[in-house]
Image 1 (cartoon, rainbow, N blue to C red):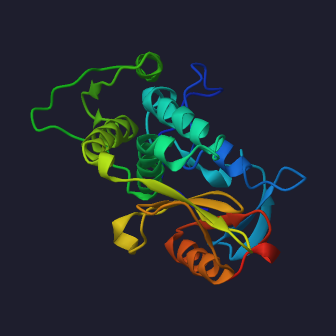
Image 2 (image 1 turned 90 degrees about the vertical axis):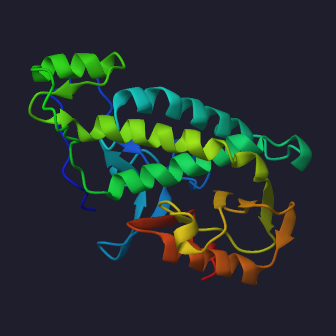
Length: 253
């Protein structure tokens, strides 16, 4: 899987900056693993099925946003969502719907960040600092953004800020979204690498286990194998680089 060029860290990554960044959290992917701890992944650029563990490189972007974002607000959103999917028996009226919405949009925005062209942000006044690579990495490790004299605001720093701003804007309207659980009567769900949102014509949808998925603005319900098939086809169509499942044999298409 080819990704846009990214800004590499120093050899041996002395400041332990975030480089391999999951689009969809490994904890979520783990819900689909088989007895060997792997999931079946269709790698679209290679046009073949492979078995991969949740921490595999295929599930990650390469330094598409900054360390502060990865270890700060993103972890907070993920942790809240994990609490929801680890307790799916929580009644609809007590479900943390906003936590689901935040994660859905974080997942979507991280996918878009993985795929977009990576350009640094330059400013007309030309102001900026002369910093060594080591100084830049120390600042990033400590949660700072900075503007360089020649390179401006580095792409991954700008991307982390952009995702945060977008999530803040979206959060103002999230209260209207309520998430019901779809339970497959037969068959299992596939999962796209991410769901772009309104642009793909699919109502916000998050498969959370082989037999369960969140779907926006419905109540909890069981669905038929035909409905599972339709959603799986939508996941395949929505996917950009890959889609995955526990076992293709159990996924109607």
